[in-house]
Length: 223
Image (cartoon, rainbow, N blue to C red):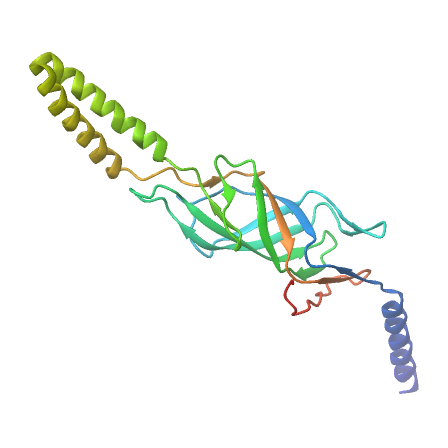
């Protein structure tokens, strides 16, 4: 009984000493975290609520100490996704980050907003919610309609002169418009390796030398 009590006391002292040695670091709201997608995401293949993973590419350093190391993993999900339509041919999605996990297994809740994306054709962050907007097919559609009008007008001129050119152009343009409306616009695709820049919207508190400990996050929003 005495030995068990002594062992418990020694264990408590060891835990207390470990906690005393741990250091706490605060990563302020507004800090930028850079990472790269580890898989391809697309409005054609993915759905809302699908998970995604990105790898941290630049260490986050505070006071000369590496707080978030390279190789840490950012996990999140597709909070919103819209496929390009036949008239409004633009794909959109929003990637919400949820947590960051260090190589040693420590996991921290993450509150961050996507502010930039690089390496995806035509993709850009479009609003304050961090939504990504894909390439527009509007110019291509106009060009195809114009080609249809030009081709129809040329044939109309051969067949019926000026009047035929007008009628032929109208018919060719209408055919091009119908064909354009029949097809969807170009999907938004974020290939593997697309660089994402997130900005913290809440302070992140990181405790060193505390494996698998979940960090606390303050509830104040960024001012």
